[in-house]
Length: 340
Image (tube, rainbow, N blue to C red; front, side, top):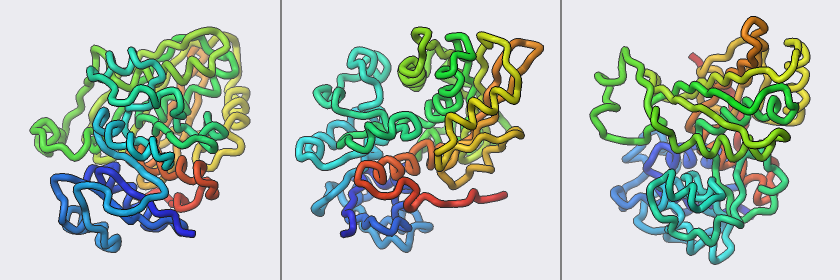
């Protein structure tokens, strides 16, 4: 039986990417897609590349649903998901409302009251490579943030194998689509082109998420992450470089072995032996990881690349859906990168 799916806020980049990916999913039919400012329009009027979907955007969900994705902003996402959660309909929240387990930390990080904190305990952090078995039995999954996806996947094997100390530096470069479908002047072509800029220097919302998940994997206490993101002139993609001091002497071959063993059964995480480019993951659900021992500085340096709109958002959401409803995990997600 075809799974009837709804997308809340299909008109943002993550929502549109969900519509694109789900269109080719053999077991899914998107029967409802909301977007209040564009209600009444065909999705193809907003995004011509999605003309084959034939979806009409509505103000509210207008069909019976078996599964719901929310690509709304934080707080609004939890509020609109609440009725579906209460009905027991499986949901994936692509926003941040159920990622942090501490209510106090959520409210201080996102500067807002949580609309339905009673659901925090029942939510599962949706990184399949770390929490696959929990996701399979969950009705509410919190899709990871785009930056934490690379940071956690990149450093999980090192944290788990006790080869690094408890402090990590993450330097990430992102394309402008990570800011959403915004009309702000600072995201215009003349502002972004031929330029690069760091931001979130006083504290980025994704840092607590990185620390929460890596600390769960740690056998030496809490992991601290110093995170600085940078905006660079490309449309999509994240390049993350992680630095951590080695806790013991280890060879390059041993590090490759640790990483390859950790992800040996994964569909979408690949350990590569040369420095990867963001174009190597453009349009697909892969995360490429390149770990290097920098002997002269006693450092482990781990580079990761992923598409912020796919593995960093919509692709991961579909991967989670597949697990939650019992589909093969890769279904609808097999896709080579778009190059150049």
